[in-house]
Amino acid sequence: MQFANQVLTDIAGNLRPVQECGTTNCLTMVRRGVVAWLPRVVLLLVVLCCMVSVLYMLACTPRGENQRFPFSRVNSPTGKDEYQAILQEREEHHWDYVNSLKRQIAELKDELQERSEQLKSMQGNNGDSLGVGIDWGNLEKPQKALLQFLHAQIEKAEVHTGMKLSTEYAAVPFESFTLQKVYQLEMGLTRHPEEKPVRRDKRDELAEAIELGLETLKTWPSNSNTKHRAYSSSDFTEGLQRTERDKGTLYDLIFKGDKKYEFKRIVLFRPFGPIIKVRTENLNLGQTLINLIVPLAKRVSKFRQFMENFRKMGIQQDGRIHLTVVYFGKEQISEVKGILENTSKSANFRNYTFIQLNEEFSRGKGLDVGARFWKGSNVVLFFCDVDIYFTAEFLNTCRLNTQPGKKVFYPVLFSQYNPNLIYGHHDFVPPLEQQLVIKKETGFWRDFGFGMTCQYRSDYINIGGFDIDIKGWGGEDVHLYRKYLHSNLIVVRTPVRGLFHLWHEKHCLDELSPEQYKMCIQSKAMNEASHGQLGMLVFQKEIEAHHYKQKANKKKT
Image 1 (cartoon, helix red, strand yellow):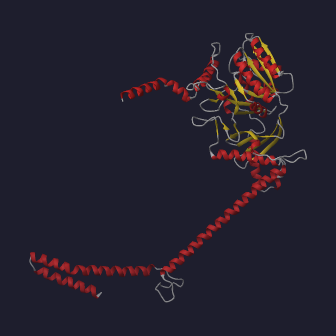
Image 2 (spheres, helix red, strand yellow):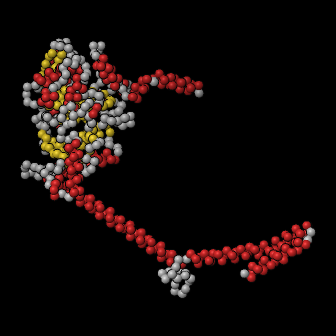
């Protein structure tokens, strides 16, 4: 403080002469005074700042356990040491809290695993995944609520019986799949009709269903003393999958059986929760006969091509098939009969029926006559057209997805584009078997057609059959499809990889009704080529003009 007083006294002394001097001399003296006392003022401010900093540190230093003022003493910790002790204590509290949370998470996982095991055990012990026969009174409340929910979801879904639907647009289609591919209807412009499941959730979903199917096969009940053979993913042949957004996902899995014509079906359902077993079946298709019915008028060359496919796939590879040809009129009838007789002799095949109708062609009438003409036991009817190509694999799919009084099959076939447009830039059109590739550039899923169908004859008769008053082309198939949708039968609607509609030029007759003519034109437009290929045709002149300009520019340069 004495130092500060001395500084102030010096400043005052330097100011007195200023009051007594002239203007010029005063300015000179002021400069000298400022130069003299300015360093002292700065030094005074530094001293004041140091004093304030010391007071601040003393006031903010935390007190010890006995509320001591934190001056350093002998054998006492400094302020830095106490800060470190506080930080260490807080870190210990933090890690204790983290470890407590980890223990709680582990306990919850163990409890969830235990509940899942209890649910699986109850399904296995009671042999009924629907909860029938379970002693509901002895279950804990959470378990009882869960099983009741799963039971309700399965009852609401179209698993055991069909649901009555108002229109054909209300039916939810299935997707078919194998180990490597998924065959889907909803493609848009970026997805493909046949593709590998790219999305991880889709891939894992199907893999989980197949894995559960294999686990079920390991515990499959056997009537003999022979050991269970080891099943692997290679035994899986095909599956269907359909998701009803408010209920869950249904999986219908088919595995190879112990013998050539035996299969095993496993039906699973995921009610937006744990996937559960619904039903298991042993299927023996060795004696399941298919009656393939084809209505025909003229078109001898197409019939010859159809019979080549029928001989290879139906007679040689499958062998459990009957052919019924319903022919309208008399023109070219001798050629058609000759093709049938030649196939019968060369392939030693006698299981065919030829029916002639002397009237105007009606597809519905022809199929109805062929179905009712059968006098044997209940048989699977495959309604087919002459421009269809099928594989032996499809015939088994037809058998697997029909069940009398339960289920009818409406496959979505793959429709071939015009080969002359598809392969127009190539030197030649490849053979038919090489054309039948499921790609976006070669065809499309014919999801607007309902003409190819498999059902047992008893279901067809009970539903009332076709409307035989419909003449000519189109309309009768949709009418029958709606009848099945309005019944309690399950309608399986899914794209299949073994059924193709071969391209042929369409002629829409003037005799058709306006509605039939419109349907025929729409079908004709869809059959020619893909969006990209039709676009190339539309802009062909523009493309040629561009090539001409390019050549002209090159000549100039």
